[in-house]
Image (cartoon, rainbow, N blue to C red):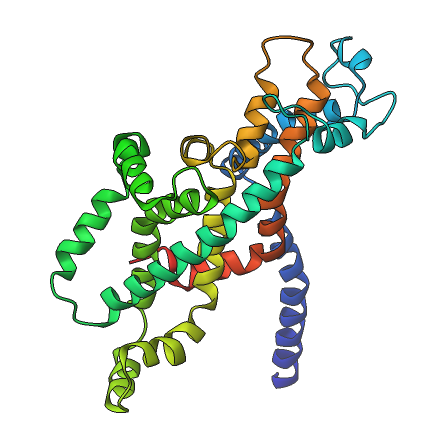
Length: 312
């Protein structure tokens, strides 16, 4: 009797093991239900919404004007050529100068570097002070920062012009960088403040008891812990500064206008024949630098956000 019971139990266990893969298979098939299919279709439509125009821009930049005039915008080029890219970089006219986009590219680089240094360094120190030190009127200051984050540039444009003129930097690379730093201070300060707020109070108390001054704690403790948030802010600020048009065209001088201003001058022609392949190539050349930065450090961007960059 006992042997029979053991045999039946073993047979039941074997049958259960055989049924488990089938059950897992059924669960796997049930995962693609109507809701999941609707989400997949919606995401596919969103991807096509952005990818189809990009495909048209890319293929148009690789065509000759004879092919473009045929009107087949979705067709691949019959003759693949990079002549439009070369012309846009070296010879395209922006205003009365015909030196290509390379002039605006280097202007954008010269604007980007001081903008990043000014905005990020100031926002780091301000966010650190508001998060970890007892600053008088800190709540009021945070409320004002929150309000300033939503003030459009057009409202304060004339005061900023007057201020930069009085400083002697209007129409210069430094003037454009200063305006970028001022406009980004509210958002970046709030991001750094929320990130530093998650640092345990025990670390700060131990540093203060060890005779740590404001700048010593910042340099030896806070700065080494800011790697993730620095990547987040770098990507945000690089994208913001590089893609800006209004600040560059308003505060930049004749020889200090960024790449976006040169691009706008190229494509808004009122005389002559519009070269659509050159315009598309110029648009892609302008968009490539921030995309390259994001693809190189994109994984650190996600890590910085999940580490607490945008929470608080």
